[in-house]
Length: 93
Image 1 (spheres, rainbow, N blue to C red):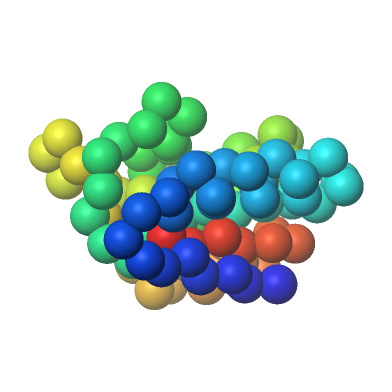
Image 2 (image 1 turned 120 degrees about the vertical axis):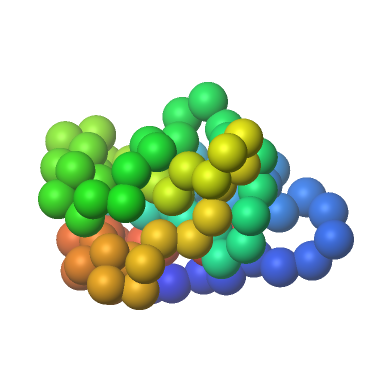
């Protein structure tokens, strides 16, 4: 299942609430972005699909993005598609 959250306010808060709900239900959750945003504390700063998948499988949750200075930007389409194959739920900001 893929859910995209768009709008002008509350996106990050909603995504974290949804991720928590899905994790409680035992789902593996992958969170990512299609835009540049500030780096959050729990973000895996990697564009390596294997590293992201390993964290997703081990912890059941991963928020992963490509670092660009003090912000993060989208993963490559290849990395995104590879990780999606291992997630039950994908949440995109």
